[in-house]
Amino acid sequence: LLGNSGDEQGVAVHAVGGFVRDLLLDLPNLDLDITIEGDGIFFAETFGEQHGCRVRPHQAFGTAVVVFPDGRKLDVASTRLEYYDSPGVLPTVERASLRHDLYRRDFTINTLALCLNHDRFGVLLDFFGGQKDLQDKTVRVLHNLSFVEDPTRAFRAIRFEQRLSFQLDPHTEGLLRSAVRAGLVERVGGKRLMGELIQILKEQEPTLAVKRMAQLGLLPCIHTGLRFGPDSEQLFAELERVLAWYQLLYLETPLEPWTVWFLALMDRLDSPQYLEVCQRLMMPERLMERIFGHRHKALKRLQHLRQALGRGQEISNSQLYTLLHGMPLELLLYGLARSGQDELRRLVSHYLTRLAEVKSLVSGTELQDLGVPRGPAIRTMKERLLSARLDGLIASKDEELELARQ
Ligand code: ATP
Image (cartoon, rainbow, N blue to C red; front, side, top):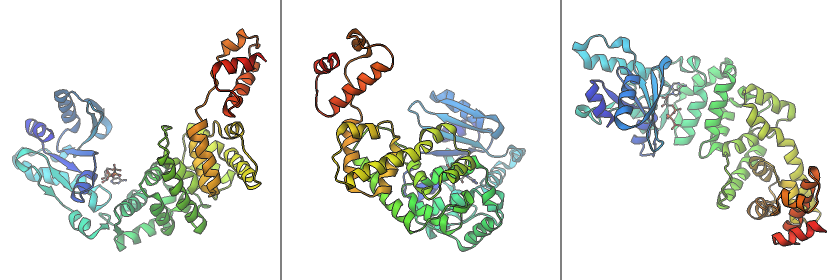
């Protein structure tokens, strides 16, 4: 379809970047990026109209996002238009323009382009030796100033290297280390740094990439107190087990695993340092409040539970509920990984699968009808009824009402 639209409009259309890389590696990738040798926004809008897609243009960048009715997205970019002034020699001009565009990319493996127009469909353009680097499993920058131009590429290099089980080309690794030594990476702005870190923590196996970040000296660029020592290694391994265990519970509570990895990465920082990291990364207030702001309290509660278990104390359902209710799931999982105690995991599993969703069945209005005064008394009564329910003392709504009457 895209190639046909390109033919109709007389512009060359190429699939570029990660999609082509993954296609050649036989890896799944549904994020299609295309480059239009011409006006990408015009192309996207015409294509969108023809195929019932929404289009979000970004005039300043000459790019557009096409959103298909089923929610899939397509990123459309334009190559530079100034190369487009000699129609007579179109093919060479097109190529020169596309080449120039691809030269701005991060690594050779991301510079491959696949033509989608009808008469050249499937022709692979490889200006910078990307195919050979894919074969040799090498991540290589395009030129010596690549990390100077954009130091976030240091994180991207590690992400691709570890995800694909590639190796940084030795010269590229040298350039990366120089950029770190020159303090370029620690000057990356908070938002961009956070974006790269999130992408790393969203990888299938973030442990490998974090270890590599430590090895190449990138962790102190985030905060000088960050390390990845044997204790971190143990915590990360434990967290991997906890997340796998959590998946097997098949609960519907939404979870962003990267936040749990983030907590583990920041584990050795004390509270003021923790705040410094959040500020450095310009972490959104909402996220900071919801998850990271409760770290201390949550860990204390889990510690309390652990100690009680250590003393052989019986924990009732209502006690467990009171301790764990309202605790962000991410903190719960991080706390579990930290404690490494199977008995605690059993209790938390019991809470998540059996108790977390239990509610008292009588309403506030029904309690008022029974004479409970409005305000905090209603809440206290509901909590009492819920505790009785959790501990199996009552089961039906009638029994709740009966208990409330007493
Ligand atoms: P993923 O599979 O993780 O989505 P991707 O290759 O699609 O990987 P994106 O981060 O979505 O990566 O970026 C899309 C393309 O844009 C990349 O293939 C890369 O060539 C280019 N790109 C992204 N960030 C940079 C950067 N900082 N410098 C140069 N090129 C970049």
